[in-house]
Image 1 (tube, rainbow over the protein chains, first blue to last red):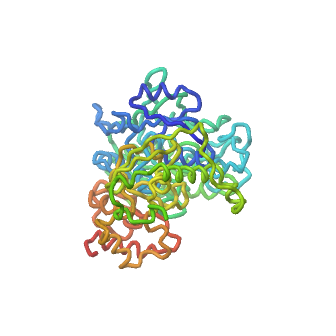
Image 2 (cartoon, each protein chain N blue to C red):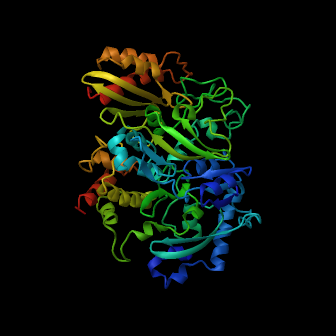
Image 3 (cartoon, rainbow over the protein chains, first blue to last red):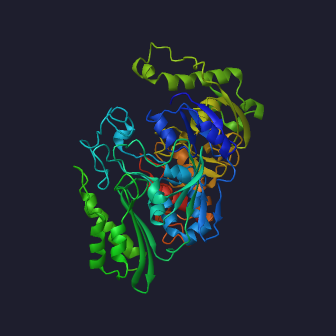
Length: 329
Length: 230
């Protein structure tokens, strides 16, 4: 790892001031950043440690009945918080499906949103072509081993996927990301937080330079009784998703009153399946309805050489996740 | 022989654990050699002088840690991981470096009551915190912790390289379970897991890789301790 300088920020103001200097990055849990620094993929000159900032490490109730997750809450604490488990079990499941217990004890809510892709070509600096790591250099994955890569929303510049499980649940739950920056505070709807690659794949999110995530806010819980995070992966545990599904339903008897479906492992961002959601509303959870609705999620999917299986897998995973969320499987 | 080769409880006093100038220079030079010149070392093992001074532009930062109940005052670079601080600066080599990238769990230690991968965190981020390593699991020099006894009883290791991490992980796992924490295989996260089943243990230990494949016996050892049968 390159030599770096280190500074501990006592508060948000100090963190933002420090971040205005070039070559500076925030460090929270560090589980992804230090890994990338060891590989020479990311090479900050200065780290600003935000983990000792007061007020960003709590889980608090919001006046509207929602919940605020401080950006520095550890993934394990968020997953096991009584209110999260009781009111947002989908989020708990998604968090617990990610990484290992040791990593969840380090990783923060804010840091989880900032995870970089696990595309092997992004990680391996032995491959000069990676538009995400080195804009304009090309994409080694498009002609390479791309079994893990995107089937939706990719571009000719980048076919990487977002690796986060937590973010898939947050997309389904319509969370809001709160940030502080040089120009004050603002909120970003979750659907707008992560980007599709387009011709700027080096940008994972819509954060502006120097902005710091302060919390993730959850709207009032509507789906606690009927939700499921289903993660399909190569091992039973401790592996990134091939495909994952966050399914959340409101049921009126046997009829779907409202539905939220988001997919992981298929795109550069958590992928909301809006057409699938609409197709479920007012319907019962019979298999034909579910299969038809699931097919809408992969309309326009473009497989790479090695990952056409994801188109089939995503549909089957949606069907199973919705069945389990609805209590019919 | 370095002080790390002696049991920490053999040391005369806490002062003995504070690195002397000589020990500090040895460990700093060793660390610099590893981080600054890996290829030179790998390609020319015999002839190349391995010890290079640390770059002048890299200041040392003070870090106070309580490790296994004993105070340590270390001087480390900002980029020094907690793992390297434990092994190269505090001379506690029980904690193992496997992948050094957060994938194998060999470096697992318990910091302020939580198991973490010490390879993916900077020592300076833990100034003032308490660390428990495998050297600190046993209650005293003559008595092993229940999880250590269970690993022996159940034959839960072969080469032993992953074992310090497995032991720290298992120790924290049992505390997490008793605290009611859920896992990815918990049937309904809205409720406490009904029991620490084999599936629960496998899932909760999945961050610790064992290339010898001692998994069934590791599960048995954890189960024995968690159920009070060890």
